[in-house]
Image 1 (cartoon, rainbow, N blue to C red):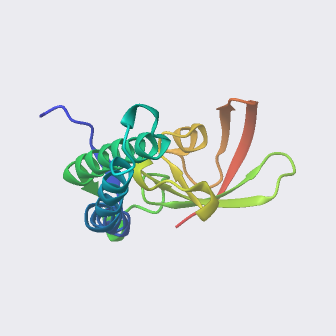
Image 2: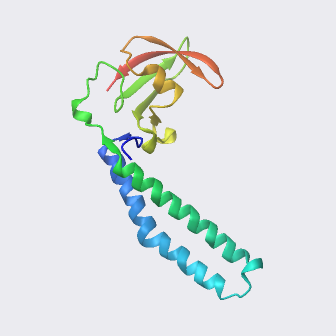
Length: 158
């Protein structure tokens, strides 16, 4: 277990995972068990789609609980107050433009456990974040994306 993957995240990101874990254990798990109990009462399990569906949900919930427990156990908290804001790194918010004439975009670089691009948080494993990490304000950076290569210019780091 010493080689388990570490999950860098903010304290808020860890709190969100802990809340999801608590919900799954205290609410969702009980709901699924109740669905299984009701489906069993219908009789023959070999052709019982309600039972099959409930068992699939149970497997999903238990898998997610296991994943969350691992992520929380192996969390590495990013102290946002100690970050050097001169260099792009995990926990910083980066504003950039696509060269030559793109719109300004801003994203906070976070660990994969709390990434949510629609909320402005991208994973440090994403092509854009990987390309920007270690760079500074004013640098032009080439990014290899699944859609091809693009060039961006870092405008600010906060």
